Length: 507
Ligand SMILES: Nc1ncnc2c1ncn2[C@@H]1O[C@H](COP(=O)(O)OP(=O)(O)OP(=O)(O)O)[C@@H](O)[C@H]1O
Ligand SMILES: [Mg+2]
Image (cartoon, rainbow, N blue to C red; front, top):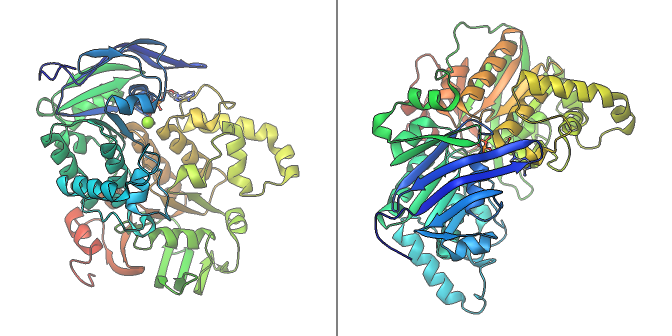
């Protein structure tokens, strides 16, 4: 293997990959210099993940060549890729909650049993070298999203990866965590590693990448230096449209209360307080934004509103009806739409078709057989409508969900939840993982529904989205609402400070 600096770490040439009815990659050329951070951007379904899976040996290309450090080779599996020092961190973490950091890292790495102490020393050393600040003996279940992601990176480093692929690593992070991740990535680069990363957040890409490759309809259309382009230029290369802005013009807030929580608290089975003294009201035509660092109760708040969790005290009213004792299915039936944060776990059956997933949305967990029969044709037709209206790119309503790209799955969920005219929409990170064009479209859909009287509870880690879309913003910290802000006047910096408690009890 040549170590000459001029030999690219990765060189793909003429790579093609088709799935039934879809050309995912076509004539792809990509060259990645060693020791650089190389970003991959492009619309939902442009073929980014597929290309990276080919490089990681998960997908077999139909044609084309792969060369690593000047050596042309065929990768048959991830094990093969790891042997050639290629590692990949997927967007959905694959960690065992009830194991420690160390156990998770050595899990699946071969031939390591009985040498735990050496493994621990190595994990501690890698963690120190890259500034990960991970304690090998800490249980994963106690860790936040940012730390979990670091474990995933540690796993691939532990296995000897020098070329590291990250698929949308920042999608799940709040701004402070993104900064921390970028520090880690810069350190990895400084020590000679090569990083490939996919993102839809163009300002982040411009801040961190040494080079950016744009994909469009399965092929690479340009490679540019961040200093030579603006976010506008990138968006145009990707989708050929202008960069959207989330800002909402005129207020549509009415005095009709749609959703009201009074003194709601939530205590877990071992007596820990998850939510305390939650009081909030959302009116018809209003978007209430919830800002918070992940793990401060926003997930619990959302799950309490949709009925996945039962409030320990307090009342929840939907259009003045007390629904505190209702389950998730009845609440959905009464008009609470729900876009969950973990779409793969809570919103989709990946092994089922698009139209089957359309039904799932309105039958919740135990679909009534009779209902299914009655709705068969309707579901198919309505699925087709959603694909059209929400620009979900997939060959047909009979395609299996797992064949849709991440962003297209998300667009489908948004479309499904906006159907059936909900009176309240609970949206957790509604634009996570969608491209800039789709993001603008989803914002438009939410604004449109808001105008017609929808009340929205919006949780988002994207502060620009929160500020642009909300009529008012509440900050959640350690399970309490600690401050209300006017989106017209608040800056992301101020919000960030309140989210971390830096301002104490802000108001
Ligand atoms: N296993 C599969 N079976 C069938 N089609 C697939 C499969 N994986 C991907 N595709 C299709 O290939 C195309 C490219 O998908 P890919 O996941 O690579 O897109 P992407 O650029 O990563 O998009 P996103 O930004 O939404 O994640 C899409 O049309 C997708 O539906
Ligand atoms: Mg993808």
